[in-house]
Length: 131
Image 1 (tube, one colour):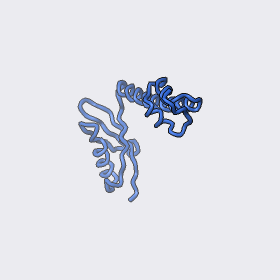
Image 2 (cartoon, rainbow, N blue to C red):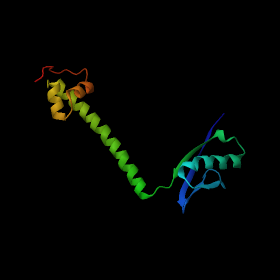
Image 3 (cartoon, rainbow, N blue to C red):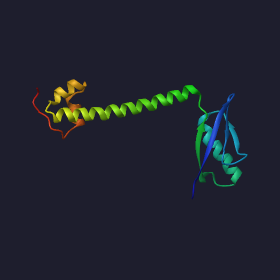
Image 4 (cartoon, rainbow, N blue to C red):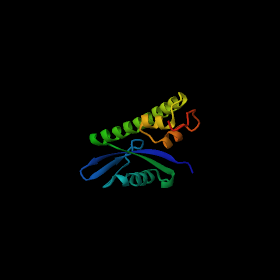
């Protein structure tokens, strides 16, 4: 069965979420909770098109308050910063070990355990003495 995806644009109006499907004129619905938007939109689309609801996928796109947009952006930036920190740490570990620093010294400089240093760059050359 071929599945068609529709966008369910929704915005908060009083105590309700008003739902519209931009691809289909006249398809509107409402629900009290955001987690019910997908099901309500699917039902409205299926009724309008007279198709099996299982043949419909719904991409819920709520209009978000500014504080939510800000929080989502901050979380995205934090994830990116974490990824950048992991890459920088791995590069530093490899460079330190390749330059002959001990696993313990590399760990002390990077505030990581010697075990974590060994996990990050298991094949890197290092002086293995306790140093």
